Amino acid sequence: MAIYTRLGDTGDTVTLEGEKVNKDNPLIEAQGQIDELNAILGMAISFSEDEKITTSFRKIQKELFILGAELSAEKSRKRINLKHVEDIESLIDETESELPTLANFVLPGGCKTASLLHYARTVCRRCERRLVPLYKENQIDETALTYLNRLGDLLFTMARYANRKKRVDEIIWKG
Image (cartoon, rainbow, N blue to C red; front, side):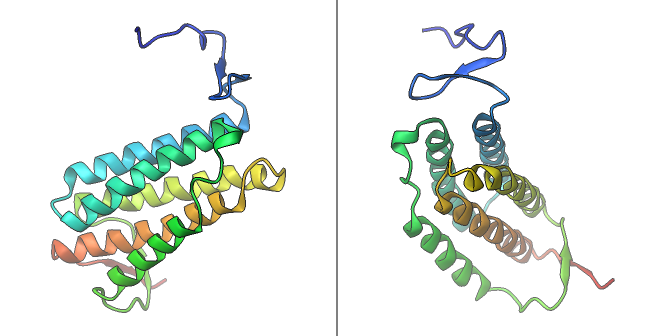
């Protein structure tokens, strides 16, 4: 089977349910943003030498793939659920216990893995912003927004963790 279908040559695509839609459809746009986030996580994993980061984000990559598919197939929605959110919260709590208490804003950067996780955080927040109008129009479940919101927090926390593991000082912003 060829990778190309020629179906998208005129700006259209087909959802998992077989509906033909424009590629600039808000659901398709959100799906693309999630795909970008997933790719950045793949880059961060490739630079990481830390098992916790690698294992955690490989799992999240699979969840993001599911979330992206959920945007394209109404019938499969809700596979990402509050258990996924709770898992992220547990990982944040566990990781924060290994970090110094945060008293200031931290500028993005540091080691390669941390820099990519900070970048992934900003893309995650963009994904979240793309989903807000869809949520307001009842096209997606609130859990998708909650999941991305918590994932953004995890990405920040793991960026701090990556810097700590590499013994790279955080750059504190004091205004």
